[in-house]
Length: 141
Image (cartoon, rainbow, N blue to C red; front, side, top):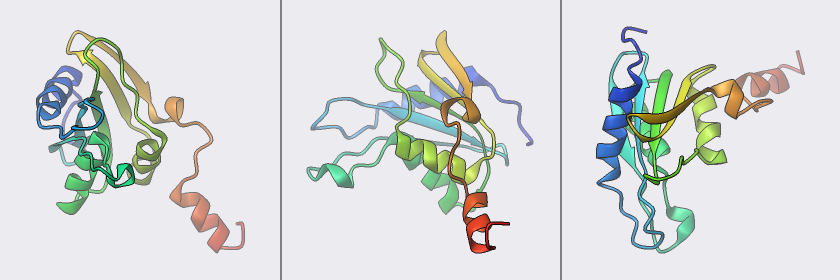
């Protein structure tokens, strides 16, 4: 990793990304900023659709932007939803985290001064990882 994790910088970028959220149905904007091992930061917001299944979370938007630019390893992510209460990532987003990190910092915040930090192992214990697929495909070895 080429960049020290600056939680407040990531939080502020997530707050900015939150402003672009397209949330005509839930009225619940979320922003995310993901730090990749290259040191680059990518942001994302949630984007809703009338067919709720077509909706994409802020966290996945940021990660997919990074992956589409050739990035593959997450160092940290900051998530800002409700400005009065912490918003945690959904299960689908947590599964995507595991695809691109064996360990990472997850920062959930309402502001740069009010936040909590977790490891991936803390928020997703006993997870199903790419290694599990390798074990299955190799006869359980």
